[in-house]
Image 1: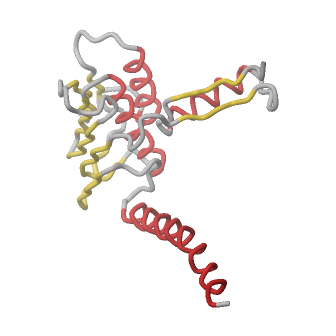
Image 2: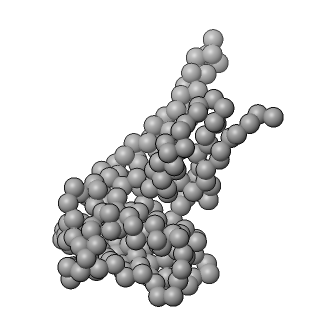
Image 3: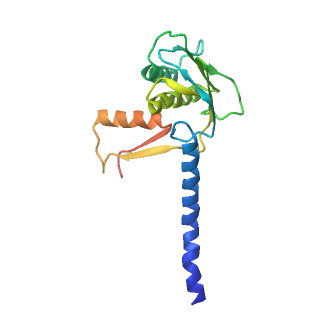
Length: 193
């Protein structure tokens, strides 16, 4: 009988560890001025805010990449195009050791700077900045610094078209929403044969 009494306690240990991890992430998320998703690897904020309404967006010179076009569209959608005096700068910085999807977002008075080793990192930084604007409900964003890189290289979603048909326009919207949460792989399951 004593061995049977110990079994439920052992079974509860993984569940308790999972609850503890979830509680720790929830606590970290509420410590941020805005509840970003996914939670950045590092974030430090100060008490100030900067207004990026109609900010001038500066892209890296001489780089043609679709991801930079998407980043520009997201930032213009969030803050509006223009030249208000505020700036959003996207800078490529070579770092052979860095994760290719990593970025650093620094928000100071009248300027936000996104630095990354690749256009993909710049897109993720722009996505975070646009998400901060959406969560704040205004163009005034908390000053601080976010350094982030994915914890997992493969962050995907699968859509099984045979079991859950979706119109093409809805599928495109689904993929766009995935990218806004930095999901980087779309597996389209077309057939079981």
